[in-house]
Amino acid sequence: MLEYQIPEKIRDLVPYEPISGSYRVRLDANESYLNLSETQLQKVFARLEKEVSYNRYPDPMAAKLCNAFAGYYGISPELVTAGNGSDELITLIYGTLFDPTMKVGTFAQDFSMYRVYAQCYGVPTVTLPKREDLTIDVDQTIEQVNALGLSGLVFSNPCNPTGQGLKREEVLRLVQGVKALVILDEAYMDFWDQSLLQEVEQFDNLLILKTCSKAIGLAGIRIGFAITNPKLSRLLKAVKSPYNVNSVSQIYGEELLKEHDYLRQAAQSIREQAVKLEAMLRKLAEQYPKLGQVYPSVTNFVYLKTSESQAIYQGLQKQGVAVRLMGGYLRICAGTEEEQQILKEALDVVLAAL
Ligand SMILES: *Cc1c(COP(=O)(O)O)cnc(C)c1O
Image (cartoon, rainbow, N blue to C red; front, top):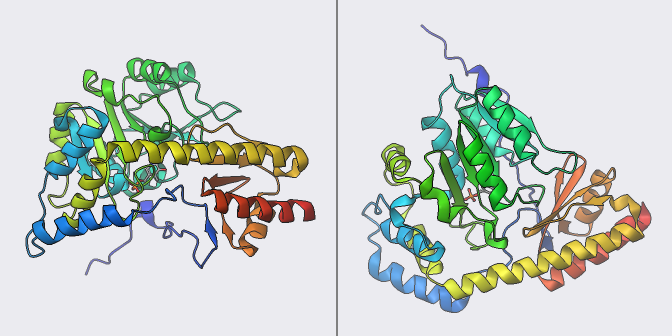
């Protein structure tokens, strides 16, 4: 009898553990602090009642959802594939567009899941450096991607966790300069204005990822999108599991993506909170140098480098405020005015005691 052996590539992986327990204020997961309104919910509930047959499979192409997405961003629906969160699409991309003979580049620092999923699918990754200030050096990256013979390059812009962004012209230069498929994760681009969605069709080597989990405010509903040229789009639709986005989520996503004015205003007000958050942290850092270095943000969160990360994280936790600890860094997401006030008071207590 052959004994089953867990493959080496996943032997040491552990489950993703977001913080648990109850907190007064949750600023750790980069979500929107805006929940759906009563009116929005009523609209969705009415449609669920009328349209969903729970005994039937959902629309495999999520056509109405993709149309609503395309309508909001002003692109052609044939470029759009929907997924069960962009996380699902990232796994799909590694599992199908790459294989273990190909190498894919990721940056340090960037979204940690890029490397986890690559590992699961046995796709070797090469970690490319960023500059000291955590920005991307485009010329150096082009040189490295081509010299190392990488087949793909995956990165987020604006970047999670650094909060920083690479301008459209720079990203274009990167896409044009590398002999590789660029997976450009624009999860936070609703908070900035340097998207390449409008240009995606012109390239045979560009695939953009979007999500409804951040600015759109539907993290619980699990919807993400891959936007790429028609040829790659057809391929993604061919390799995805047929019913990857459920009927209920399709309706939530479609309804909300039709509310263009609401979505623009929501993104704008969240962004305004992030600007206030960054200013507040900078002021605190002047008062308490131990808060460390605050990176400039174009997103809905702010990244900090501090030798006291652990102590600050735990001190905030004790006061019911959750932020994200990442080694010698902290990532803090924008909240409501009230939540940010609570954060400020909690930080004052923690920093004064250090
Ligand atoms: C949050 C996040 C995602 C995850 O999106 P889901 O659609 O919720 O799976 C993808 N990429 C980046 C960079 C993120 O920060």
